[in-house]
Image 1 (cartoon, rainbow, N blue to C red):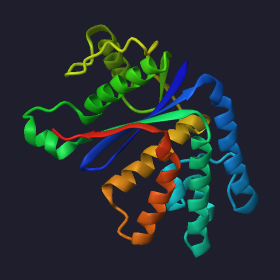
Image 2 (tube, rainbow, N blue to C red):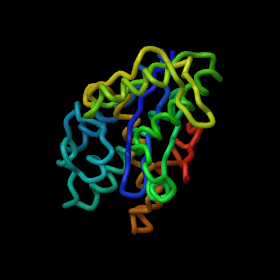
Image 3 (cartoon, helix red, strand yellow):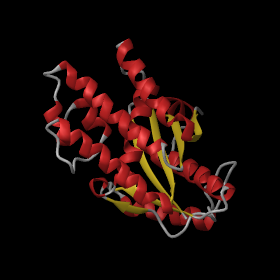
Image 4 (cartoon, helix red, strand yellow):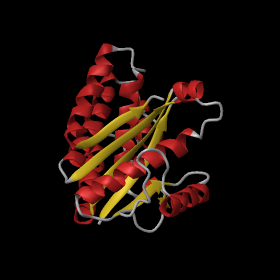
Length: 237
């Protein structure tokens, strides 16, 4: 069984959903490795050993990571170090990363009544998850962070299983079992792991970091997980 953790990240131009597929035997080792990353940070900085690994919070020194604020320039490097340690821990395990995106402006320009971006990207992502599970001769269970409208997403998932996802790769997702399960990310290191990947990917793609130094740092961070990426595509209608 491949436990597949999904997380969304978006801005006004692009909508992304990322999947982190982890074999069941690697769930606990990966979770423990990420625990160790936070414990290491707590040994050196004013951070709780139970802090949530959340991409935005680490980069912006907020929430659980507010103790590592920007008042000390060394803290910026320290936070990048924590982010890097977490990504290395993820890549050290047998995981696969799938990235799907949508150019929102081009979708609006092409279609008079476009489907919601989340619906479009989720269907395409699930198709790729199903294909990867088939290639591995495995089944997959999808787990997402708690969000508003979870019941609607479960219903969409059920509709796909019955009638297909639509489009040229329409699939009833035979390798995906049960429904989409929603859980609080604070309780799941693996949901936190996919958040780190999704947040970093969006920052790189959007080029929101105007500083060359910041962009190079993010490219370095991405290089840690890039070998685990098996699919990365943005649909531009």
